[in-house]
Length: 292
DNA sequence: AAGCGAACCTGGCTGC
DNA sequence: TGCAGCCAGGTTCGCT
Image (cartoon, rainbow, N blue to C red; front, side, top):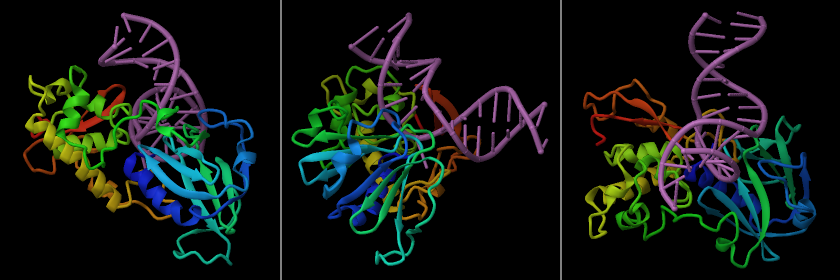
């Protein structure tokens, strides 16, 4: 499900019920997701208080009061839902009513507040693990994770540096989490359309011989930022499932210019028809008229 | 070494 | 109605 805007949307939904609350009980309903839960995972969480819920790329990070960090990744199909009992007063009445567990509910966090937070993941490509918090950017799975595209200093110069000497199509490298953290298939397609850049353009061509960013590099960096910010403002994209922990749907899928729109006219009305191709095994959608 | 395809897993949709 | 085939917002492994 989730790229950066969806993960950020989930973070904003979970933060009010996680930050400041403690894990009263953690129930694992199977032994693994994409990878096994670490030894004594539930026991190590029990009693710990969440000091902050952060996002890094597509990861959610809960800083705990004993200097460890709960690391969570939603994979393709992971979602959280918040169950509040009738007594618990928690602003939006959009929270799910407490009820029976469903298929693929793999983790249940019972928080000290009385709220339950349930992680559901049909395909089990998600991940939960614990790490020492001292220097998390230098410990797996974060060692080697790329730049944050919403950081203040993300620019065409960043792209020029990351793409230097690379011959792969820019679309493939935009999705490489070791370079840029958080951009996935949808937003790579949408950003390239916004910047009017062909997904096939070799990545190395975004810098001049002297290493300076090209005009297109600046345009692409701006487009990435704009599309991610617009998607976050819209609550992310909801394709098949709802993505928000509060149960509401994201809205950005209604604004896709190219993603999953093969055969439809380009929104620029330039006479182009959206085409589907494949890069690195993933569907790519683009307009061959305005994207060069 | 970079780049690509396959694998991991389940569910939903399409077409016969 | 049933079933086969294909596709899916991600990551990782193994082969050129």
